[in-house]
Amino acid sequence: MGARDLLPEPVIDMGRKAFRLYGMATAHFRPDPDFLLIGAKRGGSTSFYYALLEHPRIVPLFPAAGFLPKANHTKGVHFFDSHYGRGMRWYRSHLPSRYSRARASRRAGGPVLTGEGSPYYLHHPLAAERAARHVPDARILLILRDPIERTFSHYRERVRSGAEDLSFEDALAAEKERTAGEEERLLADPSATSYAHEQQSYVAQSEYARCLRRWLEHFPPSQVHVLTSEEFYRDPQRACDEAVAFLGLPPAVLHSASRVWNPAPRADLDEDVRRRLAEHFAPHNADLERLLGRGFPDWTKP
Image 1 (cartoon, one colour):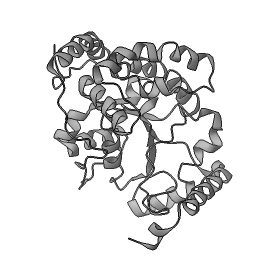
Image 2 (cartoon, rainbow, N blue to C red):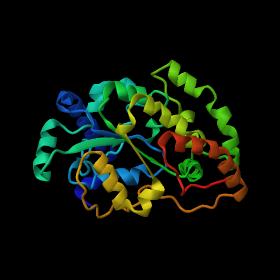
Image 3 (cartoon, rainbow, N blue to C red):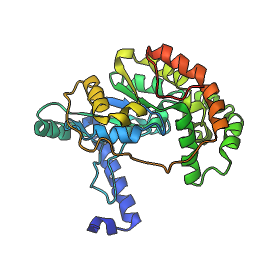
Image 4 (tube, helix red, strand yellow):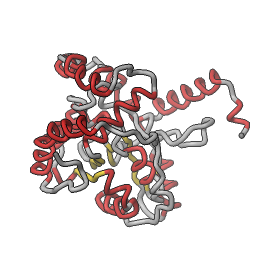
């Protein structure tokens, strides 16, 4: 344990605030992100993002890990969904400066890229429009997971955090009532946030085609790269090679690309529930296949 790990929490909070104030004061010198990893929640986005950060020409957000105790590199800013009202100066305060990017480029032997990963962007009804307005040249990355497994994992995450006390079946049954009118409220009031829409939309966030179509209305397909968590975990090096090629970078050996971040203990899903979810997601998966022109053979079939 280092000396910084012994600092009291108020001091750590003051440090975070100081970094953010400095970032906002220098926002003019902080270029826009080169890519956005938009989801999916519980789809492997954290593991994928940190794997990409191992590439010598992909640099982290500001401040980088190590400035604060027990800190990893910041992954997501959640600007285009939950914090849009804080403005672009606040958003750019999370991005590396031109100076730090130039210094990193000299070390790496070529121009570096930076980006952020906020998995609620995929589902939020205004995120795509906002991103297109402010960072239209950003490349869009998306990692998807078997929708049944993502739905169950999302639910179990809420249970582990103490935020969900219903059984899985009861939570699925309650989802429609819990989230009723929330998307309309977000659309009507751009300053609004919704816990139910973000955290209790277990099934809705796995209906990928509907969510992705919003992004494809604002970003051309040539600017969007989609992979699956099954592909990533089966061959992380290949998945990352394809992603960095999409970003315009040469391949690089990523030694710990297979590390799983935010893992969850294995849990069995009732087979009858699995069957009903498979039937529900079948038309949504078929729509996604038509939208992207590719199949998803690893996913559960009804």
